[in-house]
Amino acid sequence: MSVKHKLHPRNRHREGYDFERLLVKSPELAGVMTLNPRGESTIDFSDQAAVRMLNRALLLTYYDVDFWEIPESYLCPPIPGRVDYIHHLADLLAEANGGQIPQGRDIRALDIGTGASLIYPLTGQYEYGWHFTAADIDPVSIRSARQICQKNGLGVTIRLQPDPQDIFTGVISPEEIFHVTLCNPPFHASPEQGERGSRRKWRNLGKGDTAALNFGGQNAELWCPGGEIGFIARMIEESADFAERCLWFTSLVSKQDSLRPLTRLLKRAGVADTRIVEMGQGQKVSRFIAWTYYPERQRSL
Image 1 (cartoon, helix red, strand yellow):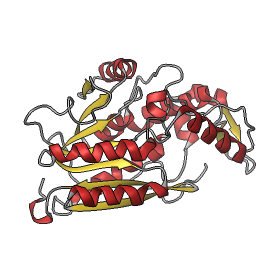
Image 2 (cartoon, one colour):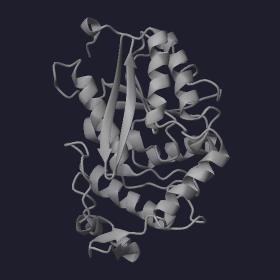
Image 3 (tube, rainbow, N blue to C red):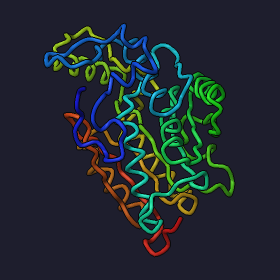
Image 4 (cartoon, rainbow, N blue to C red):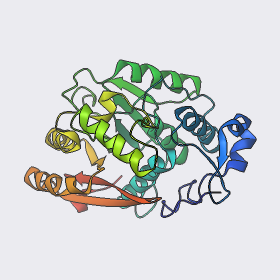
């Protein structure tokens, strides 16, 4: 069993991939398994088919997801890291709930850019029973998300964002209230920057310049003008129009250098509180930024 360090204490994958357990529910996984130099079971993470098979096994074994298929070349997210975000959001919401982790469908979460995988609603609904609304600008992603939802009998609200320039406008209905928003934004500023990043990643792994990005991804999933700073800046600007309609707005931030300009923008926006939450994931540290317009005395679930 390979060990992942510093994942959230409630993360089911904190001790790594339990291939023995996964094989019970997904025996086909044996066909893509190999041994690492330490003699531990693993898969080739540069093999997209193997990564998808691993994700299906994880979702079935730990989250009771019987059906999970996504279109070829669409983003195949690493589940342990994604669910870590959900657990840290639960801790953030607990502050407004007397220190108790909030559970049940009365808690409403909005997933911006849910993608074809629907990964946050799948894992978050299982872990905490929250009601998720999932939005995306890509019709193919929306069709995939709806199929996953329908075939698993899940009560997720799925909405197509009609205007790619909008984030909350057109998705949040009149008088609708959310407790938290979450987002894994496009982090590259251009396709070329994304390609350079992929090549650098695979050189570091000893895979050479020509290896494909193992988790895939379409343009809208991987890049946008201005990169993640540009995207989250638009999110901050637009969030002011929904200041009373959501307790916490949040987004993953892939680059440490992005935090300083984003915190400056939040200060100018006049938010009541800003948080930067670090998440240790294997050999790297991930993070998300959160902001609220509610003063502390008014934060209550």
